[in-house]
Length: 444
Image 1: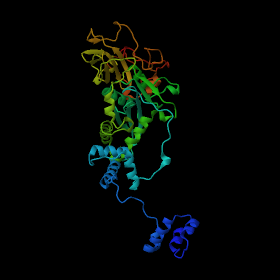
Image 2: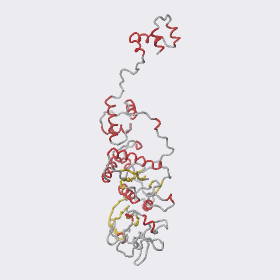
Image 3: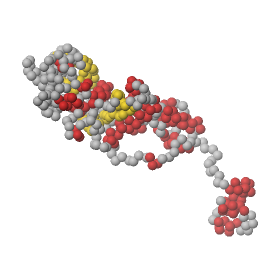
């Protein structure tokens, strides 16, 4: 400003060229500043905008307004509201004829003052990323806590396909998640999408107990019976299960925007709505702007390595008959009189059948197509041990220790049936020996 003022007031300058050389300005600038000062005084010396009078390729104001409105709608829905999400919303809504690019939307938000640049929040580059090649190659399972309006604690458990981010199952129960609850969530996912080849979890007790020096948990044993390999992440390294950890953030933002919820039934209904939205409507940037359902159906499903059967997996819940048998298609599978009247979950994959009572693995077998009745596999009068709950004893045979049985959830303990010879699992043996369901549960 000092040089400009000097140039404007230098009316008596005799040698303009010498003055410009001394002030290190051009003669053109000297005469421009003098003319501006003569026309507008000191205000005429202020910098003026160099923006062109018209820009044919500029984004229309109506499109910029649509971008801002779309962002506000996404925030109200509890959804992600970045440039990608805004662009997908405009494409789906069809409110503008030509949807701007992701970079243009980002510049619009900055120009309108809607967002503030925060380069320090940029995530650090991960050293190792992984994604499995096919759907059902690996599921990530986890549970998280939530609260109802009155502050009642709720546990939400779910499964997420690593390849497509598809959510096969999502449910909630009061309190914390239990072994029986997380297994029922896994069964629900298997009933809809089939048996995964691998299952990845953290080291929570409801999922895995191997790193604590104990025998495998019921969750791991049941997956092994289905031919699914159970994998757990390293301790204190949640990045391994990063996909489902990030999923919880998306879920809770959506629940907070549509809540609060007074009862567990309301929360479970909301989880069902969210699962449909997440799987079929919400596009994913890592999936090249596709939904999880589109990617899940685009490739053939992976199968468990131990049982690569082409037949689809079917989950049914039935009650054990008075004869101690379970109907499976046209067959009757004997499971033992100790389970008479109890509901059991039956997973069928072709001729391969696995039966669970809560978290208790009752029986697994390959159906004999030559006979309707599938017996326990031993002759009359022969004493046999039940199917193992603790497979650490030896492969194929095991016993339930009284101390472990008392610690199991109530819904996983079969109540005594009509056979008076069945021992009560809840009462420890007076000699300290392991108690078993002698003749109570069928052997595979």
